[in-house]
Length: 428
Image (cartoon, rainbow, N blue to C red; front, side):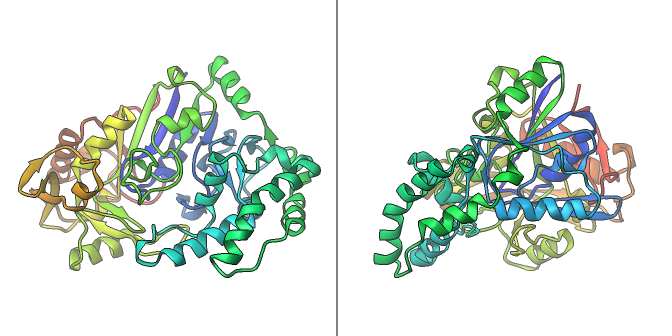
């Protein structure tokens, strides 16, 4: 049975949660392998909306074991708030497993995130202020806190003391903030230890054993390709590996075990935060996509920047992830538009390019070259097969498939679980 990776193919918010939830009935483990509570998945089941920020989407599917991998940074306040929230709604959350090697977001990470963004002013990155970047920085600087540390008070206190030795100098002397107390942070984190203990384990062993036994494991990325620390629009990116390669480093499962890589892509494009966005719309069309598509952040509530579909980015996502399939979401949002522009290439200083420039300056100057496709009328949310769609909608999907570099296997025509059309199987 396969190991399947699901990644966002744009700047996030493509609908990965819904896609993962749909695949959940075919898999036994769902693994979140990067990021933290700086991203959110919205899943609608039987008319009930669930907004997940840190938990894997598979937690909503009975008999699936949800796993938070070692590549994730965990805010324990958020973790237990989410667990309590879905438990109160009748969801069994007792199956959750968390890697002991996953790093912990402490209160000082959140403080540093917020004051640093304010200090940067116009040069700010546009973070969510949830401490994700500082937690990953501590991980790379080898002064981070891991889940295992919460079960040894002496080690935990020593690590917090070592981490705060430099940070307090920065907070007090540069940012004019009060120093953070080692005792306060230690006590705050220790209060979670006993409740965490049954969930924390060596998840790499669990997942590799599951694959050895022929079980299907789905790896779910937070954020998306264009926010990847290495392959995104640096420096306006997240602090982790949001592309398919991150599934291996963030879970402890080797690359030869991955069978399928599925990219989630909207029928148009959105992003949040700062950074270049070639197809961004500042007119009534941008407002229309935002309103009809409900483009407001699951985690932050921020209005998303909206633009037309960018096939250059889709081709790039196909390349860096090794995509085998696309899931196209929110096709229904485009209903009623007479002609739909699609960006097929960029103009950069008078030169046409069909490849994504990785140079920050070049991408900043990229201007979209559009091709127009006929739109369609009417509500398509009740369509349940590709043949049910209007001809123009089918033609649009086929055109995107040809422009984007791999097959479009599934199409979303509404927010619910059932509002999905299958063209090809995503789980063989």
